[in-house]
Amino acid sequence: SSRVHQRRGIGGKERERGRGRQKGREMASVVRTQTYAVGAEVEAKAKGWKQFYKGRVTAFDEASGTYSVEFEDGDKQTGIKGFNVRAAAKKETFTAPDGKTFDTKQAFRKYMSETFYSFRDQSGQTLIKKEGDIAGQTFSICNLQSCEVQILDHSDQVLVDGITDCTVIIGPSSESVFVRKAKNCKFFIACKQFRSRDCENCLVSLYSKTEPVVETSTGMRFFPYSASYPNQTAHFAMAKLQPEHNHWCNVFDFNKGDASIPEPHWELVPEAEGWPLWTTGEEAENPVPATARAHVVPKEQGFAIGTEQTEAQRVFDQQEEDQHQQVHQEAGSTTCASWPGQASATIAPPAPPAPAVEEADPATAADDSTSERPVEAQPAATAAAAASPKAQNLSAKSEPATTIAAEAEQVSQLADGVNAIATE
Image 1 (spheres, one colour):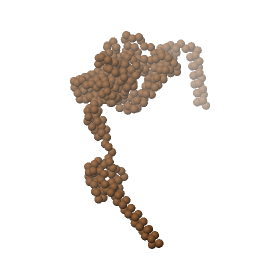
Image 2 (tube, helix red, strand yellow):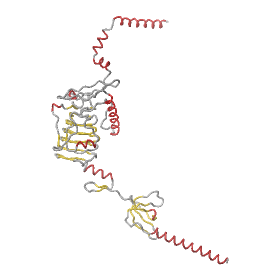
Image 3 (cartoon, helix red, strand yellow):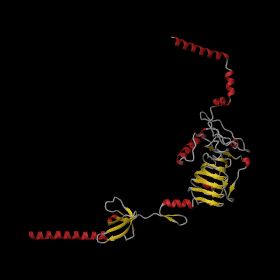
Image 4 (cartoon, helix red, strand yellow):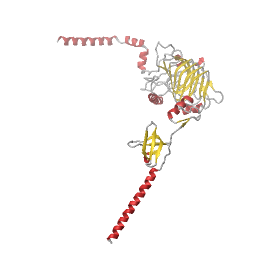
C-alpha cells in the first residue's frame, strides 16, 4: 500500500508541474502578443527608467515579446517589455473659428490674438468687431494710420499702441485700457481704468470707473463718454461697470509741473464748446448720463504704467469700499462742480470728525491743466485761520496790553533764575 501511495504522490506532483508549465506558456503567450502596431504612438519606459516617455513603436520581437521604441527626443531603445509600454494619452487639439487646429494651447492663443483679437498694421481702413466677436477677451490695437476702429462688444484688458489720426471706439472693458504713443486721435472709451502714456493732442470721451491717469503726455482733452451702439447697457453689466459712477473729470497727471513736457498736459472740454457724439444709428444706446460724476476720495499714491494690475486693483477696491462707507456716513454728497448751463454744485459740510472731501471744479480745470488733485479740508477753525492770515495778525494786535506785559514779566523772571544758577 505504501508503494501505491508513493505512486499517487508522484503523479500528483507531476500533474501540478504540468499545470504550472501550462500556465507559464499561457502567460508567455499573453506577454508576447503584439498589442501596439509598428508606428503606433505610445508611452514607454526602458529598463532602469523611473517614468514613461512618449515615443513611436519601431519593431516588435515575437520571440521575446518586447518592443523597440524611438522616443520624441530621438533616443532609441530595444527590449522593452510589454508591461512597460502603454497607449499614449490622447493628444489635445485646439480649433480656431476658421477651422485651423493647433496641438499646443500656446500656439492656439497666439494665433487667436493675432488673427481675431487684434487690429494691427493697417492704414485708411474701417475695422469693426461686433457683439460676440470678443466676448470678454483681451484685445490689442497697434500701428494704425487714419483708421476708424469700432469695438462694439465687452472686453478684458485693451492695449492701444502706436496709432495716428485715428478714431477709436472701445465698448466696456472690465479691466484697463492702456493708450500709448497715440497722436492726433479721437477716443470713445468705457473702461475700469484709463491709463495713457506718450500721447499727443488726443480727444478722449471717457467713462472710467477709477481716476484716469496721464503720463508724459500733452494736449489730452477729456469729456464724458458719448458713444452709443446696440445692447451697450448689457455690455456695461457684463463688464461690471456702473454707468452713474464716472471718474472722467478726475484726471491725475504723473508729470504735473514738468516743464520738459509741453503744456497743457491735459484739460477738460467745457460743455459750451460742445461734446461730440458717436452712434451707430438705430437702436443705439448709451447708459452713461452726461451728468454722471463720481465721488472723489483723496489718494496718497498713483500708479505708473509699469504697476502690476493686481496691486493697482487691490488699492482701488479698498479705496472704493472706503468711499462707499464715507458716502453713507456723510449728510450730503460731493460731486464734480456743475458745467455751464447747470445749477452750481454745493458741498455739504461733513459730519465730524470725518474730514471733508473737496473735488476739482471742472470748469476751472478746463483752463488749467495742472490743477491739483483733491485734498482733505482742514478743520473749520484751522482752515479759517489759514485762509485769512490778516485775521491772525489783527487778532494778535488786539490782545490786551496787560496780557503782553504779564508774559514779558514771566520771561524776565525766568532769565533771572537762569543767571542765578550760573553764578552759583
